[in-house]
Length: 357
Ligand SMILES: Nc1ncnc2c1ncn2[C@@H]1O[C@H](COP(=O)(O)OP(=O)(O)OP(=O)(O)O)[C@@H](O)[C@H]1O
Image 1 (cartoon, rainbow, N blue to C red):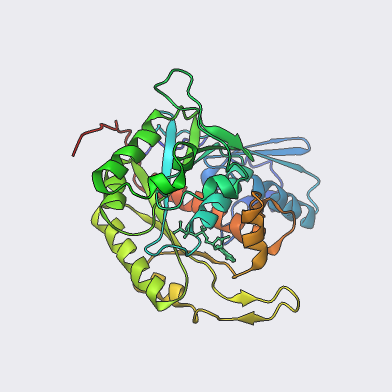
Image 2 (tube, protein in one colour; image 1 turned 120 degrees about the vertical axis):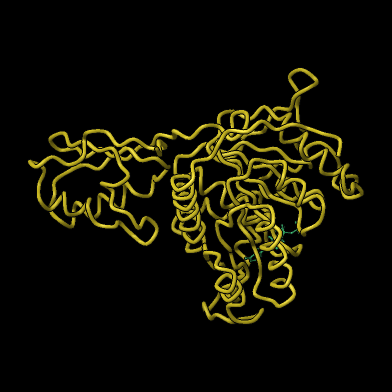
């Protein structure tokens, strides 16, 4: 019997206003295509409607309040969440890989912005920079000069920035030294980085994978108890061919594909807003359709994204920025996809065992 989420007995009572019951009983939005009555624990106390969900959804509070106001229901919405998932390993509940077949398509940018967007929803988030060929996350979070510290010479403390916990191969070695690692040595080092970091309790650990579909990527995908992978691609033919290999690799090792993100989808002129399909049209979307992978979103090629990354302050932190909102919507979709997937097949906790092969 599925036991991920037990609804309480506080589902709407008959004395709840009819319009409130109808609001909560409708599929809520494209991001949350379920009725809140199906997933939330709810209570109504005079002027306050309190919902507790099985996944982080800070965005829902504002949307729900809007709907309550629109229906002239004089209620204050409060949303909280409770994570009842078992840890997939150590203190980490769900591991999400961000991968790309080809280098330079914006994988690290996407991983950083998604991790911060997940934290903005109220989740406890870790970000592991496993991109051994170009650990760029320290730079993108303004921590390029930081080094990992150890409390006992055996473990590593993660850094904390913008509400997320960070670890990077770049905090341990100079990027030039890391790039010479190959095969087993690289995967061994990366697995050590995962295991020896003192992660606090995390709802999501986002892993920025090295680009490509070689041995390192395969070993990591097999050794980590992964909840799912997100593929980042640009619409160019060469990137798509490599993204296809990524999809095939994850399918081979039974890792669910949570979604595809088409980055640098179109060029957006910062002056006039004109859009141009600089790398072709919707290639990522066609690939996603062909392989039946959900599309999480499309991002423009936009100098603001690069500038924010270079300044060490990801664009998702900017208030009311259109691009920040795209990342936030993608994170919401990701949260719901992970919830739904776990609900359909509850995961088992596993122990990570290091071997020399
Ligand atoms: N949508 C975008 N618009 C403009 N610049 C972008 C966009 N996405 C990424 N960039 C920039 O492109 C460069 C490469 O991005 P990033 O490091 O995220 O790619 P990557 O796929 O992780 O690369 P690598 O394979 O080297 O790790 C960075 O300078 C980044 O700021």
